[in-house]
Image 1 (tube, rainbow, N blue to C red):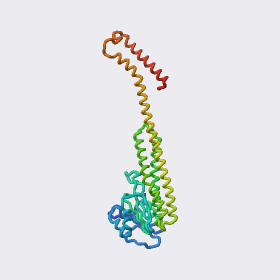
Image 2 (cartoon, rainbow, N blue to C red):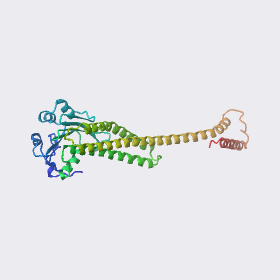
Image 3 (cartoon, one colour):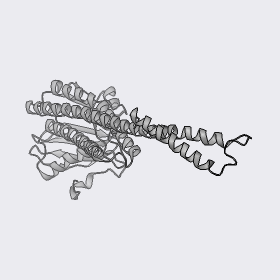
Length: 338
């Protein structure tokens, strides 16, 4: 977690200002904080300087500043401030416009409940926008505040993408650990709870795959179509991140298949247990059916029942029942019923 200090005096997340934080990069891995007023009036100064503002896109004044302050076309402004969060990326003149998704690690959120990050950059100014809290921008800001951060716009974007994809791996590892624990658990303990956890993992895998697969295409477009200020080493970093994302998507498929196999195994065990129980009940019913017939026949309340007056008739019936039981057991054993 990034510690806060005096440099966070302009992190206005709790105010009505749309600025969450603002930094002016010095081109050497460091940065200084700027306020919202300073960010709106900022103009490129010293060589290597770059402005980065991280905004809450649903607050008042964001769209107006993007359109009037930065001179962005209305469709681009709508894209950067809209709730349409499908990953995409394209070049607009000398600027790069992108919508990316990250894993939601906010309290109470599910992994597949993604958080979007809109990006606009012309090489000298970088604007990132979000609606819900996202840890990735603050992680990059922490490097800048320590003096070992990215030195230019392309490096900031590649580091943002790298952090977002790395967090995806954390979610996959967590799901695999749950699957490993479930595989080692005794199904007899609580099969229903285990099946519920497996169903949750399958939903998470499907959700992550559905949301992150389009990001693969968006990153490829950034690598191919980014403007000239996005340097060759930045493209190589993006290409490595794309390969990593591809591996993570493959890992998601493996996790999903592992969950399916475990779920099928649990259901097969439950079905086998139910079949064994039904089989035992059937054997018991088959054993007692003839005995019940004999005792029921002798117990009817009509005249002519043999042995009513004979004191030894009870033992005769007992011997008869034992004989019937013995014959049944021998027959069941020969038929391999048990």
